[in-house]
Image (tube, rainbow, N blue to C red; front, side, top):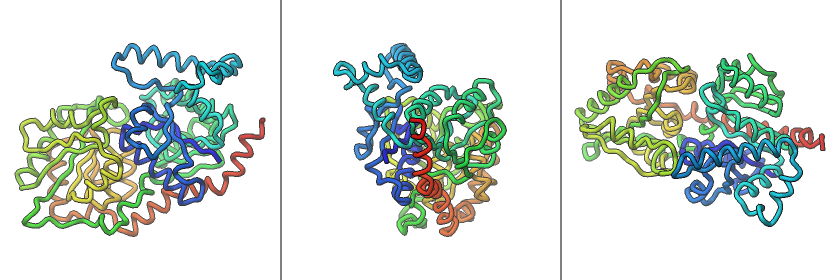
Amino acid sequence: MKIAVTNAVLSNTGDAAIYEAILRSFDDAGVAEPHEVIVFDANAAVTARLYPEWTVYQQLTVSPPRKIARVRGQLQKIRLRLCDALLADSKLLGRALRSPLFSRTRFAKAYEALITCDVVVSSGGTYLVDHYNFGPRVTELQLAKKHHSAVVLWTQSLGPFKSDRARKAITEIAKVVDGVFFRDERSRDSWAGVVPMPELNRVVPDVVFALRGGLLESAKPAAATGARKSRALISVRDWAHGVDSGELSYAAYERMFQHGASRLVNDGWHVECLSTCQGVPSYAHDDSKVAARIFSGIAVDVNDAFHTPQGLLHELHTADLVITTRMHLAILALISQRPVIAIAYEFKTLELFNSLGLGRFVIRIEDANDAWIAERITELQADPSSAVLSDDALAALRDSAVGPAFELADQLDRLVSVAKSDR
């Protein structure tokens, strides 16, 4: 079996954690060893250097970042036209891509890799939502299906598909999908309200829970001593609207974080900013720059280095509190058994914390206020364990998060056989 994971943005360490967890799940289920899986990324030339142990191809429908945005925009249009032509079964273009002149291009190599896959997994994440144009992702999955690959969506937060654009795109995706796994019931209901449910479907925890950080002895909380200050990690980001596209006062969001950080500093804590999105110059987001702006004048250290998922787990193991807007930093903190306070900029974080019985430790970004963060900090200073998952809870989450890989293993022959039956 040749397996590919697509729709990855590995410059975002949250996405890299998703991919690493998928690889581990496949390995555990006997589907494939990590070195047997390839990944299609939005900026392959950069992420291949960040993760040399992975086989990374440039995503067909995405042009890599360029210094001149206008150039990238034009190249993006060319890529989409090429993909549309390949979908339309352009024999001339297909032959050209295999010719000596073009076969060594990144596009040709990626296309050949995609169409020879038996299974294409669309990486877990939050990209099938109304405020994103996910039309290009549809095209890539259609190309995979056209060449008889089984197509599976890994743990997704998606919907609600209220716009005509979103409803049209998810309808097209549903035509080529053989299986879909949802992070929460809300996402499942959004899918079921618009398109038919494939036979292979289930609600499961985010795949990153498949990582083993919280089950390692080294992950046990280390009590602060007189020789070591308590350490808090904070993750902030830019954002323009509330959950479900509601109105947002970003100034109130900034003030809440400033108030919380100042409170911890005054209580003698060491406060450091750290995020899943930083340290990669070509990536569109650098949360360390946002942090430097928000916490200017406050005794907060800003860590601006790039970290792999394992690097973040290492940092989290020495933290006593995590306050984060990035959901996957929250998940990595949870599996590291650290107390977490979360600010939800999309519904996925609300659904996650409510499902874990930690609803009082999450707030919608548009509801951010000083009193709430002060109350949560006070509560966790008094009892950190109230926002920490138990060993048993983590083991159950991991077993469930790995489950889709075992289900895929059970149905792999059937899915591949059906996908190839039209040949």
